[in-house]
Structures are given as C-alpha cells and as structure tokens.
Length: 188
Image 1 (cartoon, rainbow, N blue to C red):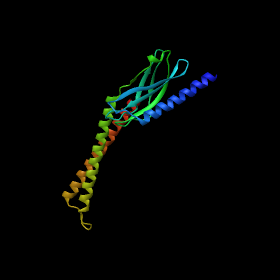
Image 2: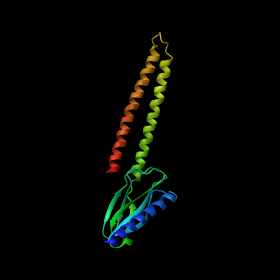
Image 3: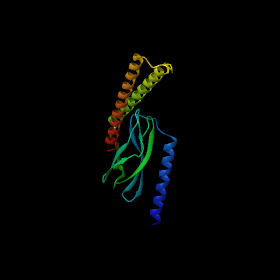
Image 4: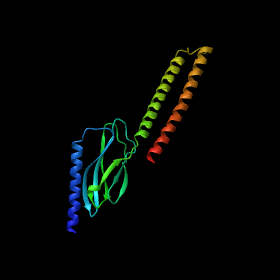
C-alpha cells in the first residue's frame, strides 16, 4: 500500500513538474502538431500521457487526438478550441504493457476547420454589407425635409435599399445555418 501511495505521489509530482515546464517554455508553434511531453507510469499497465496539441495558422475547433498502445486505442477530444499560433497541454490515461508502444496522432479536421473559417469570413462580409446599406438608407432618409414627402425617385431608392438589406439578411441566415451544420459535423 505504501509503495502504491508513493507511486501516485510521484506521478502527481512529475505531472505537475511537466505542466510547469510546458507552461514556461512553449516551443515555437508549427503547423497543427501533436507531441507527447511525458509518459508517467501510474499503476500496473496504466500510464498518464501528458501531451501538447498546437494549432497552426487556423483555429482548431473540437481538436481530437488518437492515442494508441500495445493494448488500447482511444480518442481524446479536447474541451476547448485552440486559437491560431497557440498550443494546449493536457493529459490522458492509457493502458499499455510496454510504455514504448504509446503513440499519438492528431485526428485530421483541418479541412472542416478551413471551411468554417471561410464561412465565418462570409458572415463578416455580409454583416459589413448590411451595415453599409443601413448607413446608405439612413443618409438617404436624413436628406428628406421633415415637412415634405420624398420624391418618387427617393422612394424607389429607399425601396431598392430595403430589398437589398432583406436579401442580405436572408443570405446571412443561410450562411449561419451552413456554419451550424459544419460545427455539428465537426463535433460528431
């Protein structure tokens, strides 16, 4: 029992030391990478795997890694997205009779992340267009004297802008729905 408690205490100390070292000295970010920082034996045939996942130049939404050994394969989903040019460190427990067989790989979701980023850019562009059209409409309305009715040409311009804003709002709704579908697909 004393040996088991000593092993647990040593594992906790090593885990804390590794996390402290990782936090202080992050390696430069590369394109989406994963790396095992440490493998710490915890109980018989069970190991704590401390690892790092880094995003490249695009955000990693719902990042996942696959950890395998001679006796087990498991997928670990990180709970938060990883912003561009940053890393996240965490750990998992895996069974292995030989710790040298423990390997890790990133589950490739880069294409879906790129698609979501492109959709986010579309959303921003449409929102920008709506803002411009609203400003155009406000400017047009502000030029109408308070005591006069707008001319037919001004009414036509107001109606055209209102129709454009309505179409843009519909486009925005459609693109947001597309984004939601991509997120559902990404998170599985």
